[in-house]
Image (tube, rainbow, N blue to C red; front, side, top):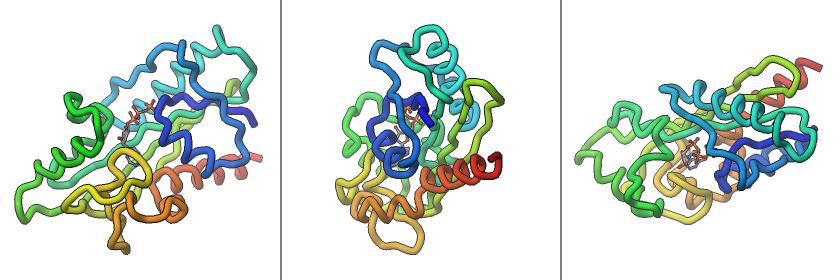
Length: 197
Ligand code: ITT
């Protein structure tokens, strides 16, 4: 199956190639427009990106694809009322580097605050002919006290998944792929495809 991945996030692309090795991914081209993500929920944004990409591809696509996959994800911190959540990619726009964003995010937690957090991922799948659907996955954990490790991307160096004492930035990436929000959403996607067949 050839799938258009409606994402410009290189970290996500690396993960999807490992998590869904049977799919052949076509990348969202550099000349294609920014995809809309104006919703209040991960699911809305994932669907917006996937539908937007399908519409553009039907007119401008360079090759046939079987469907479009979009990922909307983020880090939800309980003490920040679930933030940055759907705004994770837009948090601290004045600080381009994640090391700095992570420091600012950690600085927003008062001393002694509840550090529980979760990563959430919603995947929208739009077959070129057929109904769109979404699947999701999440992983519970807590925030570290400082940025630790360089594996993964984004907020990985400050997130410690439950049952571990190292961050996703320190843990081997293969381990992230056994329990991450994106791994769980991909498992649900595989389930969905096999149950359709
Ligand atoms: P696309 O919309 O082009 O896919 P994006 O980076 O804008 O890329 P999102 O709107 O879904 O994607 O924002 C999600 C942000 O949440 C992302 O930029 C990361 O900072 C963070 N994030 C999501 N999954 C993550 C993961 O597995 N590890 C670390 N950070 C993650």
